[in-house]
Length: 405
Image (cartoon, rainbow, N blue to C red; front, side):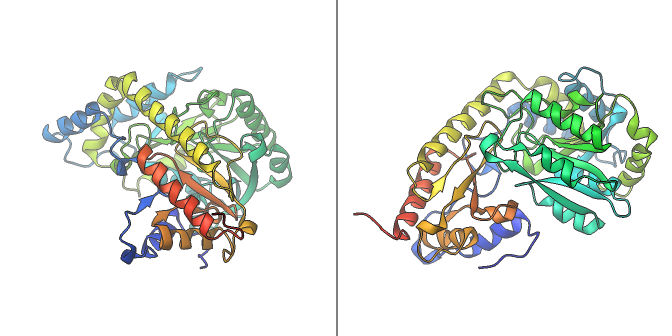
């Protein structure tokens, strides 16, 4: 089974679901999509629900919002993000988007100049490549190093960057790897970007979802070193991906982006984009202000338990290896040894046959840039995670060259 280049995650998952054998009458368990709302152990806080309901029933937010976003929403997000920074953001630094996906499209579009290229991690998030293809922006891929906790290969940055490089993408906490970068590593990335005079696109959609030894450090901390476009959303931390409330923020206390006219391009571009629903925007100040730490702590506890369980179960599957235990986000990359399996060509073949035979969905690593790896989502209720990985173990046993027992 071949897949098209630059196919989206949702696209490949649809194809995998279509390959399920309904005659087996097995419950389908998807460890492929990063949507925790599919499982009952992940729910948003009642504060968020009440805030949306209050905004909707007030009948004050049924009209259009300003294209940059409601003033109170921009102010709330600037104050929320400023709590982790050594300087204060202005509401004017914030642009409200329809989820983080639109923020990615916006960032690439405003940086798209003739012959421009952007440096992007491998493995990474395929939406960047898809958006770049529409804007005729070249994507140059640098490797993340699994043996170093998926850190950026800084030597590769130096080799790839040239006079046409406009930005580097940093995804932290990491999708698809589950990495959380240290302060020192982020500082080195910022210094490297400064050396090459490029902008950092900081994809922080999983911001604060860190449960390992490294705390979450926003890239905007280094905004005085290098201009940062911070991308984020309510989706993951508040477990509301369907609300499509995201943001692009210019973390640039030295005003370099204004001098480069990037800010003016931002303002013009959002005039042609449709943002999230006005009443969802109106709920944001209450959501950010009133959500308790208890809610966040509970979510992190579930994610850590699931991540630990996932790694433990993978150790029992001979053909799969997890090089680095996830420290954040909701996914982990696992290496697949196809040489141990008969009639399995590669990771795509593995995932399609697994779906057909065991009704379990994993994402082929080639989708995120690594052949013969798979991405596993662990934001799943524990019983479903255990059952799914037991089925993967059975599948690997069935296809092993030397099945035992």
